[in-house]
Structures are given as structure tokens and as C-alpha cells.
Length: 412
Ligand code: NAD
Image 1: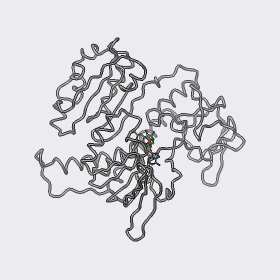
Image 2: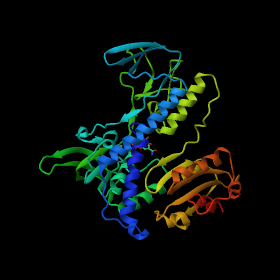
Image 3: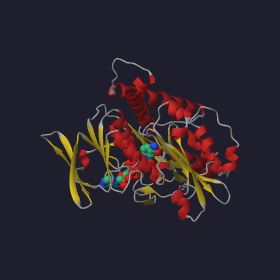
């Protein structure tokens, strides 16, 4: 709640509105005297949203008789936790422990890396930089690129691999690249950052990077380091407690149990897919295992959502993944330019792609890049979970006009 999904999406919401008003107000018949944004107010609004949601969760905790102890916890024995708050240390005895301490931004061994800002810090920054360089074209880098671009600022992304969002369907990267270049975002791929330095005269940061054996330097008012997040376990265990880890991540078995039977772990701290909804599902499944119950969630079907504009969402197999597994598939692609709601609300062109097993007609995957994609993807998650066929989806009547009806048109 404090650092991540809700705060980022709150700022992105304001930035998207600002961009839409700036670019489209005139077209859709709105007139205003002057439009500007105020990052201080945006931050206040963000805090307000966090506070409201936090209070709601606190109420739920109370209702379910969950005791919250505020302090810094250290696991000192298999069944014992020491909690430090202010100068006091209180020890409690417990039956089971679930570690859900999450992750922190990773800092690579690059000269001058300490001069950069990380995403947790930038999320709370009341300054807006005229030009920002982003190291890493993963999900965090791309979402911040959209935030800054929507506020009319210049962005340069430096990505080490040959495309941004490297672990997603390559069509997303291709479409985003075109879209971002229209919004004053420069993307440099295969760019290996060598050094970051600060120039006292120009008051700018310089990023030196290697690309195809040539050396380049770009300068910016701030450099965001977004090259991944690492498990957070600092001071979590007493020295004599040996919890197995793998490159800093807590090792767990398929039941989320660590090498100590009654200590479980879930979320970013165990690595894997670092997403809030995955962390929640893992935690709930872990508690099911603790209580000897059947786990609730199917961890094989995990939606990915990126809050760009238009949004990106993906579930199940991509075409490349299906091909790699030797499955005979067909791809259905529907352009959102033919969807009424997309046209009337002046959305960017996007697409819906459905991967279908040719032999069984079952839906195997879907990739969407369009307005409200993150809300709509669950329809495909359900279809895959319930092994629905294309013919099953064709029976559904979708309301008109909606973004959702594009799914109906695609399967039609
Ligand atoms: P990431 O792993 O998604 O991307 C990091 C990128 O940095 C990669 O593309 C990598 O090739 C690149 N990189 C690494 N070292 C580099 C270097 N020295 N120079 C240039 N590029 C370099 O990590 P992230 O974007 O920091 O996100 C961290 C985690 O948080 C991810 O697991 C992500 O899925 C999650 N997250 C998800 C959402 C969402 O789902 N909407 C939002 C924010 C974060």
C-alpha cells in the first residue's frame, strides 16, 4: 500500500487526465483557461488515497480480530519473534510464521549508481524533472516513463536487452516503442550503462553507456534506477537461525514452507513473479497449507498488468510460448480502432490477441493493449481456468458500447 501499486497508479491517473485534457479538450468540445499540474497536490492526493485504503484494511483487521503489533521484527527462534519498538523489545511465542517482507529496489554495481534515485524515492518526490533518464526498460521504468511523458517532460530509457518489457509478448514492446516516441520518449536498447556522474557546471547528471561497442553520453536532470527489486530480509533473522536463501531470496517449497517447518514465506521476498496480486494469492495459499486446508488459488494462471496508456494485460500463453511447446495454435487479433468506445473516447489504437488451440478450440492465452485492458483480462483468465472454447465465448452477449465488446467481436 505504501510503496507500489496504489501510489503509482494514483499519480498515473492524474498524469493521464492531464495529458488527455491537454491533447484532446479542444477536439471533444471542452474549453479551459489554463491547465497545469501541481506535483505537491498530486502527492497529497496520493497520500489521501493511501490513507483511506489503509483505514479500510485496518477496519477489516479489527473486525477479524487480528492483532497488529507495530515494531521491527526479528525471528529469534523457530517459534519466537523479538519485536523492537522505540527502546523496548518484546518477545512473542507463535505457532507459525509467515514472512511477507517484500522487496527493495536493486542497486547494481555501476560506478556512480549512488547518484541515482530509485522508484520508491521518485514516487514520493515533490519535484518534477524536465528531463529524466531511466536505467531499465522493465515494468517500473516504463510506468515512470509514461508518468513523466504524460506530464510533458522528456524521458530517455536505457535498456540493456534488445527490447523493452523483454519478458512479455514482443508486440507490446514494438507498439509501445512507437507510442512512446510520439510522446517525446527516447528508447535506447542494448545500452549498457557504465557510469553515472554529476556535472557541477551544467547541474545535470551524465550517463555513460556502451552500445554496439561505441560509447555514448546522455545528460538529464535526474536518473531513475529501475533494474529490478531484491528480496528484503535485512535483520530479519537471529544469527543462529539458519533459513535457507538463494541469492538473497528466501527458499520455499511448493507449500511456501522454508527449511524450518513452521516458517513460511510469500511474495517478493521469495522471488518469482513480483506482483502484488501474486503476493496476496501466495500468502493466502500459504495460510491454507499451514491450516492443512486445500489452497484456494491456481498459481499457474497469473495475469500481468502494466499501467501504461493504453494499458497492457496478458494471461496464459503467448504465441511464441505455444510454438515453443509444440502446440498447434491459431492467433486471433482484433484492432481496437474498430471498437466504438475506443473511438468515441479518443483512445490510442490498440489490440486484443487471443491464442487458441487449433485442435481443441480451447483458449490458451490472451494479450491486450487497450483502454481498461487490466480490468478486462480476467474474462480470459476465467476462460482459460474453465477450459472454455472459442465457441463458448461466442455465446456471450456483450453490452454495447463497451470496451469489452471488442472481446466479443474478436471471438466472432
Ligand atoms: P524488471 O526486471 O521488470 O526490469 C528491469 C529492466 O532493467 C530489465 O529489462 C533489464 O534488462 C534492465 N537492466 C538491468 N540492468 C541494467 C543495466 N545495468 N542497464 C540497463 N538496463 C538494465 O524490474 P523493474 O522494472 O525494476 O520492476 C521490479 C519488479 O516489480 C518486477 O518484477 C515488476 O514486474 C514489478 N512491478 C510490476 C508492476 C506491474 O505489474 N504493473 C509495476 C511495478 C513493478
